[in-house]
Image 1: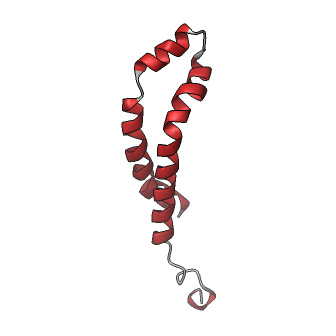
Image 2: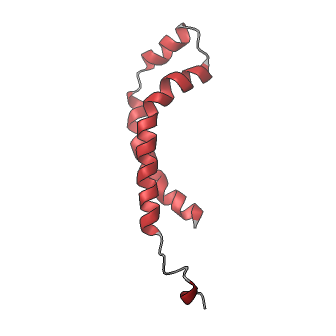
Image 3: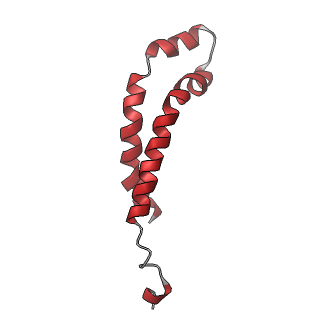
Length: 81
């Protein structure tokens, strides 16, 4: 069930993160490299702060979708007989 909910919720995360990744200016990455940042520092200090709101939104949408897809009656003791 976890795998199915992951595949159902993954498009919500991708659709919210993709436009932000496209909008992050490559000039910012080049500026970080010029200032001496390695790739890891560039990801942590330039890309992740720009992605954080989109990631949180995508995860919230995916979580809401997962909650909507769970059926509390299907796992109750009365139906497991």
